[in-house]
Amino acid sequence: MIPRHVGIIMDGNGRWAQKRGLPRTEGYKAGLAAMERVLKALSLAGVEAVTVYAFSTENAARPAEEISAIADVVVGWNNSYGGNMRVRYSGDIDSLGKRLSDSVCRVAERTARNNGMQLNILLNYGGRADILKAASVCAECGKISEEVFCGALASAGMPPLDLIVRSGGEKRLSGFMLYEAAYAELYFSEKLWPDFDADDVKDFLDDFSRRIRKFGA
Ligand code: IPE
Ligand code: IPE
Ligand code: MG
Picture 1: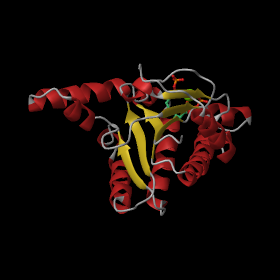
Picture 2: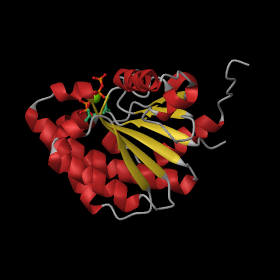
Picture 3: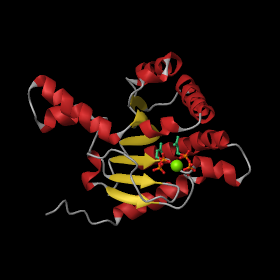
């Protein structure tokens, strides 16, 4: 069995750079290259949708230099992406400034009619805030239903989240898709994100294919 929707917590970029005596900001450039390798392998494997965690609301507490390096990587990728994925962003994008939000809108528009894998990038995202937002959408329309609630989450319109992969050795979700994670399989790797490649994708897809999912039944 291949997971339909894979979530990835791309952690360990800063440590990867520090280990090499490089500034942490270099880790984000290397992290982008890893993301491209991994997405290509997932697409070739037939995965329908991927959500990557690029920046959490809590990451806003990082030094300004680090935040602007991440923004540069994101804008650069948005403006140059020419592949066949359908790209969208979720999170509080508007508060990140016009340069970033314009590039987000443009890549989403440019790729909307593509027919490749769906890519959802979580940027300035928090899982608790996402749940609160969905609750307030329910309150506003006066209807509490799974349909309205799930339609307001960052995963709206995507297949169920089957697998969450976290690189970098930590065994926690750090706010990643807290509602959607309910029955996702979890895979933790000690490898730092910039070291991830197609072999790691094979490893976690093979591991997933051996899991016995019971959904409580
Ligand atoms: C995760 O990498 C990506 C972002 C938070 C943007 P880190 O920057 O957290 O890397 P480590 O965990 O410090 O190595
Ligand atoms: C989670 O990594 C967020 C992203 C990968 C974007 P963090 O490095 O922010 O998580 P903690 O602080 O180790 O929990
Ligand atoms: Mg980290």
